[in-house]
Amino acid sequence: MKILQIATGFPLGFPGGITNYVRSLAKSLKGFGESITILAAPGSKTEQNQEFAEIKEFSGVSSVFSLSTERDDKIKSAQILDLIDEHDVIHFHMGYGIPRSFYEKKIAKPYVVSLHDYGYICPRVFMMDKDGQLCSSRDLSKCRSCVGRLESINILRAGANRIGLKLPTIPSDATARRAQRMDKFLRNSARCLAVSSEVRRIFKSAIPDINCDVLHIGNDSAGPIPIRTSWMPDGRVRCIYLGTLNHDKGAEVFISLVEAVSHSRENFEFHFWGRGEEHYISRLRAMGAICHGAYKPHQLSEILKSADVGLVLPVWNDNGPQVLRNSST
Image 1 (cartoon, rainbow, N blue to C red):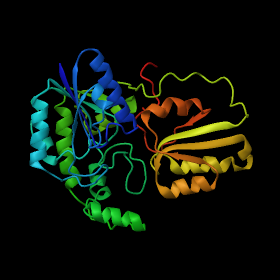
Image 2 (spheres, rainbow, N blue to C red):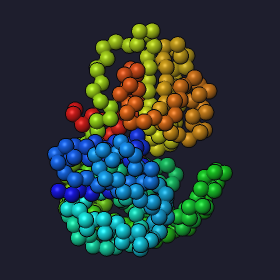
Image 3 (cartoon, rainbow, N blue to C red):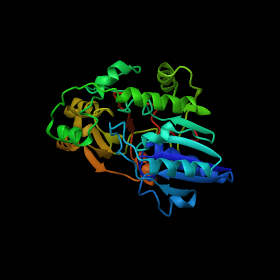
């Protein structure tokens, strides 16, 4: 069987939960004798990745987490549809940068959609509004102002963020049009696969008639990690934060935690592995935390063996953190 996995937005080697899972799933399916193709962002074609899948690279019409919901490219849409026609089953993992007109076409082959995050019902992905407040359900009337006309212009949004300016709110109906396309896309899928019961609840509250089940997923990047029965030999407690350091992922919570034990710093050691906003990283370094920068998926096992406590601190309804969930557990 020829299976196409669609995971645009990030290169396949990016050490995130979704890309880790896509690689793990592709390797497993390859082991069962299936023919696997992965459509992913530029930079995915490496010798290691091509051992378990044919890699197709896709340069999207907008950047990851862009709020430009109306971007289109009919040629790129046709190219994706042609690729779909060459396969038997299609598995969507993320669709960042896929042109608008693609979602307006009928997909002739059966397809499933893994709901790793809330991107299909929330342009901001995290179900957090423009003021950083949690949204427990989709409210399209609120979306009109949350993703307004000015914020959908990438250059304006980037410039405003750089200088700390809050753009004036000019309501837009673009989010409602986007919702129509995405809702239809999810309704027409053979199955939506939510990675947690909370993700299923939120999607079903937005689109009650979608066919949606819960499928807890994982990956093999972390490898088998022995259970630690004592602290490190020097008696220090090593705490580790993995991933992206920003507001939604709990950067302020992490900083507050480091500050809270500053009086007992000789007993604790804090490590951050990943990418993050520089102002957060600078504050952590000033407080003595060790910031290692980006890591590769194959490093996960060794990173975890050197830690006593793992920190998972998102302030959004995290979809079900997948980076450290081992597929065998």
